[in-house]
Every structure is written in C-alpha cells, then in structure tokens.
Length: 101
Image 1: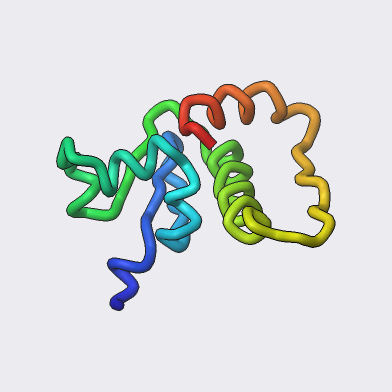
Image 2: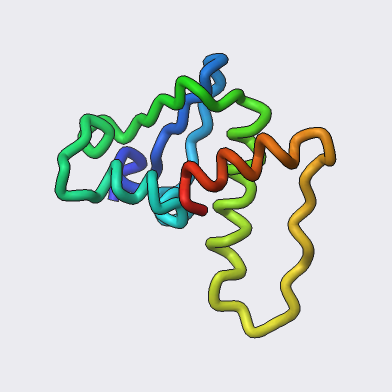
C-alpha cells in the first residue's frame, strides 16, 4: 500500500495538517463515513479532510486520542489514562462528540 492509501490528512481551521494512519482515523465514526461511506464524499478520493471549525490545538488532541484508541481498543492489559489539559477539555469533548470518537 502506498502512503496515500495508508494515511489520511486532517487539516485544522487554522491550517495545521495532521497526517495519521488510516486505521487510527477510522476510530472516528464521522471520519470513517467520510472516507469509506456510501455517500462518496470528496474526502474519500483526496484522503484530505478539512475541518473549518476545529482548531489545530484541539485536532492535535483528537489525533492523539485516535492513536490511543487504536492502540488500546482490544487490550487485555491495564489501559493508561488519556490526559487532556484542563483548559481544552470542554472544546475537546464537543469535538469528540462531533467526530463520534
């Protein structure tokens, strides 16, 4: 597989770009629908998803969480706590709700 098919680029409202593994990105229901859904979003072709309402600092936390979820989803060992800075919690939760992750 080429990097184009194994990775997805998420672009924040302030222009930050996050290239993450496709499998990690698929842990978000919204992203999964955009790149795999039957509706044929442009993002399923370009593998780039711009988020006009998500700032880079929040998208960074979301990307870290997607990797965290991917890594520990079927773990049988103790799962470490996922930490988020207190000033980012509310906005991160609202974004996570929107992204279904």
